Image 1 (cartoon, rainbow, N blue to C red):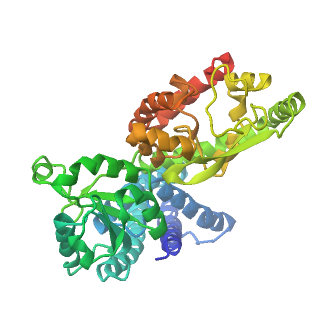
Image 2: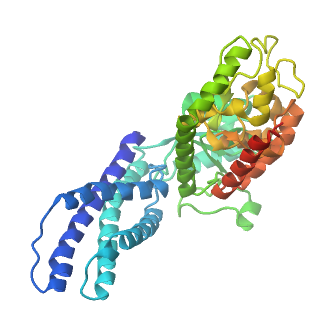
Image 3: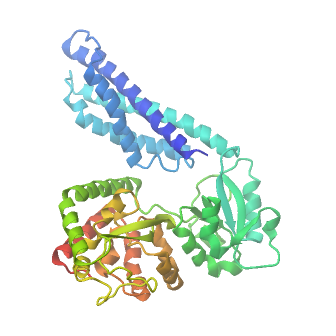
Length: 471
């Protein structure tokens, strides 16, 4: 599979559709609307303004589609959902075009406004959805014919796993599951499913198994006797970039927990969900980039001053960097102004405390005002972090946190942030127990994640910086 090429094809065809419609509408406006207004035939002249609009307006449509999340998961599209999504985004885009451009046109009667809107709405939807349908339908056929598949593992090894595997594999039309192996929960001498799939490892090795095999989907098909492990398994999977499905029991079906995504195929509960609507996720990223660029340029003198003080007051580098764990468990280097003496962790990883002798005098001031964190705007700019999100931790401490609170992996579903609800409400943690205590605030943030909450946290953070009241 080449997801980049598939995404490019969607973008390219959307651009072509928008360009065709604008060309048709331009002729319609000249030949009908303006001719009707002035009482004589208007010559269609393709001037500089026409070609400028022909190049730029389709880009606006592409940005709108990207903000709606259309270009995500390009191999997992539903033709019906695509129809509805295309109709809604077309309606929104045409309304914007109407109020920004069409409303200024000279017309004969107000009915021409309605006619213009219906013309561009109808043709834009028709061409856009036609091109999309052709591409999506071709992809769906390839998936059904098993030409395209998603690396899938079954977590479970006995009756439920075997039954699920046989049910999915017996379908004439594939739903994209390309089974590469199974993961066992309880160790046994023999597993029923091993005749059909290779053994990949045990459930405690899920992260490595998924990374090594580029797994895109994990189906949990454990036995009733293994249900005690379900929470632990889901907690391990949640922080990874993988679609999680669970076979339901009869209670789940009767209570309405099982939502059909297709008429055919095995009934499965999809437990992943979008934390934020796609348009909010796109807007959040745009805000991250804009504010980071602003801070890195406008406040560059502050960077120089702080860096100079760090260099003059204590020996050692100005910038301190350290490996942290980011979204989907991917490691990255976080940047800070050095607030500790060099070789502060010569004896191994250790959290700082309020009266930590390893912290320099100026470092203590920086921590109070959060000045040590400002180099992280570069981390935000390159996509490792966000302005707002759970604070990233080192793997050394994550392993200890998970032993006490397995739901920590829930935080790995989002980009870590410069500031967070846990940081605002709790501040720096001095030990693992305090990390676990702060965790509840970060979980609360993720469960209520929105642009409004982000803005609220940013305001509180600014107040902490101005007051110098950080912990």
